[in-house]
View (cartoon, each protein chain N blue to C red):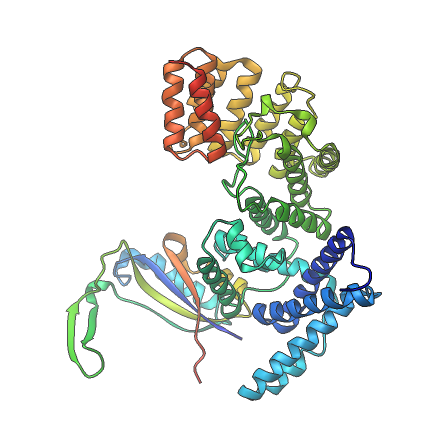
Length: 115
Length: 414
């Protein structure tokens, strides 16, 4: 069965803070409900903790790091899941149950098969 | 040349037969191969061979079976050739058996795949014309006024998404069916009336485009109705399309200028299409006693116009009431605008003008300003009318309407 990445965009905040306890609970519940299709995934710290890495001039060039992501957008990448589903309808049904879809958005994309 | 060249009529009906049957065969091939490109190539080959051999050898007893066999053999050939390259011999063999118990559902499955809500509306419209109507990419591009290269790219992307994201090939479950069917109907109606997802305000007109796919759209509406004859949206859509199609001949004068509904030569309307549409409206209404279907209601409004012997004899009271029903199930600014136009006919231009001005959210919509201008002119307020018409023109009122407006402005005098 094909794999889908469900990429979650939402408020760029630290979900470990106590005021997001309900969100954490919602995600735990989702993880249990969707256990049959989840093949991986992670939640992420806010972009203020991120480092952008770039190699100038292509492979072997100078490594340049900078603080945070480049673009300042309202919603940031906050996490992702890998789902194994029969088809896009099923993947969309699960994506709609990710708590991040309720106040942000979830991008569902088919995963390239390797090897 | 053969001794007896086919008469044009016979050639036309053969062409239609091959096209209709080819569509059903395509739907089956998409299912068995799981690939649009392969299925289209194979069916195209079968269709060409039919057009070549049937006029000479006669039409086979079972045209669809004939086409299916030829297309499937061709698909197997193509897949075998690829398989030898990629060492995937078993895929070729899988094509030979057709385990689906309901192949007659294939066309409906194909409709739902092409109009899947995860595809952009542009992609749905393009696929409907290319895959469901069997137009070539060049014809689709011409019908939608898009450069051919752009259209080719759009179709390729849509097919790629269907394949790699696995957009399913199936008829939705009963509980999803009404919603999904509404989506399909919206796409087909957009093919019919590409300027706008909504019926244009009264006076109802669509511009005559170099690329006009309304014929294909009515064929699609017929197909959809044949596939799900009990579904109100399918009944309403077909009724609406037929009733609008019926009035097409009166909508433009010899110079291609739009003629408002009240001035149209009603003797040019197609009575057979009207009769067919009216029967469907009745059936659609009988099937939706509790909650009206938006397409059935829009068709009911179209029927009021189509049945009126003259503009003055139109039952405007009924038209306004139908708009009230439509607002209940489909409340949009354009529907409100159309209701206001009907109100102007029933209660006079003053009431209509007040109603138009009460509609929010249509400042950028040229028909709003044209409708307002018309009522201002009737109220003998020529300066304001001219201003409103100028605004409609500046906002890109379609050509046939623009020419009519230019005439009206001249008619106002200095």
